[in-house]
Structures are given as structure tokens and as C-alpha cells.
Length: 353
Ligand code: ATP
Picture 1: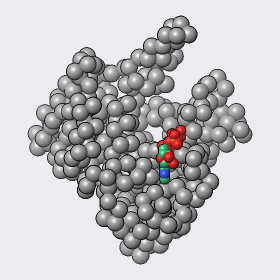
Picture 2: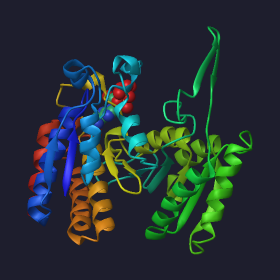
Picture 3: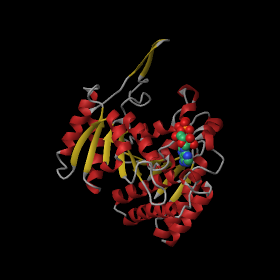
Picture 4: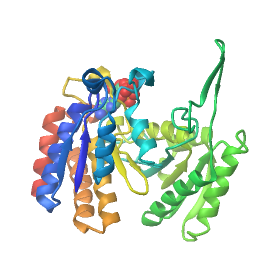
């Protein structure tokens, strides 16, 4: 498997280095033959090349079997004319990574904030309120006068349908339950269409039980009883917000693994941002990116029918669970290890499995 690695900004280089140590151990242990190529995006690329993402990097991402993207300082990148492109948006849009899969579960050894649970948020990734990707040309936000702004939200049947299919397929590999999260009481047309398409796809998955919940009520339900959920499918912005909540409920944002998947490409990317407040301190939790990388290995294994990749992915998840139970972790989840030491300990554990 050829993997393109882009460490990004803030804590990105630290959590990427720790993740690569684990991936190399997994490659050795399970005979994956991982070939890793590194390049740069974000601030370092802007300094060196005048753009946060070069076209050569996109070509390399297209040629690779998978992409590992560290967090980037998206808030700093405002003006595309100055080369300030949001790398996360750039790859999601250009590689058509339409489904963002964000699991959240609790672990023995570090109690979650709402009891034991295991769920997955499947978020539409290419349209909705995301003004930087929902138009063919231009931007979905318009400043009508200095005091009047309009933000456009795009919803299409095709995008609803394809993300719903990913969610139902996932539910059919898990506990056969799917919850549609929406705001169709207010966004009657757009979210009405989202529900319609989800229900239409659901008719092909008779074994999956489906319900739907309004997004504001969902915040209460997921805090009160996250155990009742298995797979949750929702539109772009609701999914972004909801999945930060579910990651934090599971213990820490630093446990939030995430895969951006399309038809032909996939990108592992932690659910959180570049966390500048803790960058360079060797305290960031690398498990978010490590678990994202495991999702990428599993995706590759399923798609190419190469069993050792799925075995390696399951082993990484098991090793993370065992490390948490043994408190071989970073301070955000109750440990005393640094980012580097957490990665090294996980790699050692994996090599022994
Ligand atoms: P950005 O602007 O890039 O999104 P941010 O700091 O606004 O960065 P996050 O990076 O998502 O947003 O961080 C939110 C909070 O969660 C911060 O307090 C941060 O320190 C913490 N956090 C995020 N990722 C991790 C991690 N991997 N390990 C530990 N804490 C984390």
C-alpha cells in the first residue's frame, strides 16, 4: 500500500510521527508492505512554496492508495488568492471524499462522560453549509452590504443518497440500527430531501432499523443515553458538531478517529483541529490520528480484499484499547506519557500481539 503522509500544522507533526511509528510496527507485524511517502501542506508549504497545497501534492494523493493528513490551521487560511487554501477542504473536494466516518466509543480504564457506548457518526462531506465546497465556482457566502451576509446551503439527492448508502452498509456490518439526524421541522425542503433519500436507501436494507431525530433534541439524547445509538447519518455541519461532542463524551477529542472516504480514494484525518494551545509540548494524544489510520487500513483491505489490512486495523484498535486500560496514554485521558512515548509504547504492544 502506498501511503501519502502530510503532517500539517500545530500538533500535526507530533501526532503524525507517533502514528507512523505504530503504522510501521503494524506493517512489519502483519506483512502489509506499507510504502510511506511524506510531503508538506499548511504553514510550512505556504512559507516554502507560496501555497498551502501544491498541485504536485494533489497528483501524489491521486496516485497513492491512501492519504494520511494531519490537522491544518484552517482558521489562518482565509485568502485563496494568497495561496491560503484549506488543505482539508481541498482534498475532500478534489478527491470527492463524500463520507466522513467518525466512530466514538468508550474504553475500559478511562470512563466516558456518559457511560459506556459505541457509535459512529457518518457525515456528508461535500456540500451542506460548507461555503468553500458547495459551489462549482465562487463561494457559498455572499456579503451583500458590509452589514448583510448570506450563507447558502446546498443539498442534492445524489449526495444524500451516496452518504446514506455508506451509513446503511456500515449499520449492516454493526448492530443494524441507523438514526437520521436533521432539522426538517425548519429546513423542510433540504432536510426533507435528506430524510427522503435516507429512507429510500433504507428500503434496500430491510434488516436495519431506522429512526430519525431532530438535531437539537439529538444533543440531549446523545448526552443522556449515547448507548441507544449505533450508526448516525447526518448532513455536513450537523455531523461536524455532533461528532466533536461524541468524541469528547467518549473521553477526549484526542480519541476522535475519522476517515474521509470516496469511491476511489480515502483520507485518514483526526476529527480535531491543530490544537495550537498544546502544539510542541509533546502532550497531544496521537490516538485520534492512529485510529484514523486504522480506519484507512480497514477501508483499503475491504476494497482490495486483502485480509491482513483488516486484521492490522482491528489489532491497532485492540492495542489502543489495551493501552488505555493500562494507562499508557497522554494526560488528556488520564496518563502521564508524552505523545512520542505513547506512540512508542503502542508500537511495542502491537509488535507483541
Ligand atoms: P483549530 O483552529 O485548528 O481547529 P482549535 O484549538 O480551535 O484548533 P481543536 O484543535 O479541535 O481546535 O482543539 C480543541 C480543544 O481540544 C483544545 O483545547 C485542544 O487542546 C484539545 N485537543 C484537540 N486535539 C487534541 C489531542 N489530540 N490531544 C489532546 N487534546 C486535544
